[in-house]
Image (cartoon, rainbow over all chains, first blue to last red; front, side, top):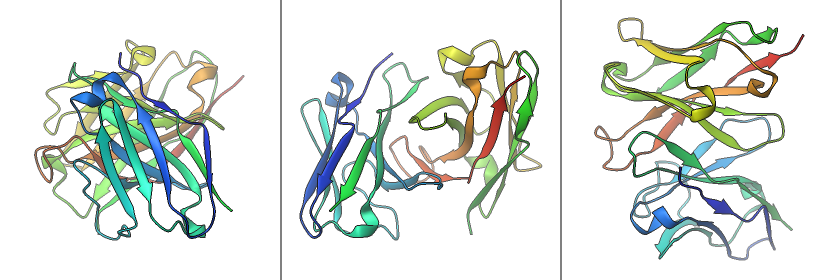
Length: 108
Length: 123
């Protein structure tokens, strides 16, 4: 089945911009969705489709795709954005969903 | 408000069976497909299973095929995951999540998640 690759860890200074990436050949044809997970909590959808944000998600979160790489960009990262971030998509078989390995974001 | 609440977790011996449940409220349950996703201790998210809105199609990740069965009761607004022949590597927090494709989006997205129920497989 398809695979999605994420950097295990990324750090950003408070107030700066950070990009978290997700690579996979299938991303050339499918949008990824992005989930934020804080310790002890359930995942929270932050970005899906062509840069759509659910209600309540700050507009500093933005999604994009270029080639085989999907990106989640946080403009002006805040302390509360420190979390694990996962990308996800349904693969071309139509019967399997795939998560990336996750990226731990540290806000310095 | 839209809510998913899992239950039924616990400690179970290897080789045994267990059924966990996910009760939905705040939306028309019978319109939505539902996922189960798990997270082993200290690990990432792993998709486990999906069931169509009407239960007519079910999909599983390879590691649970033949051992796990997803089902739903739309009259009770509940989705189930029956797990058999449990292994130590099935130890995880199990989340249910709502799929919004075809209802709220043209994309496959898990928009609402429960808080999870913990399964520990140990003798």
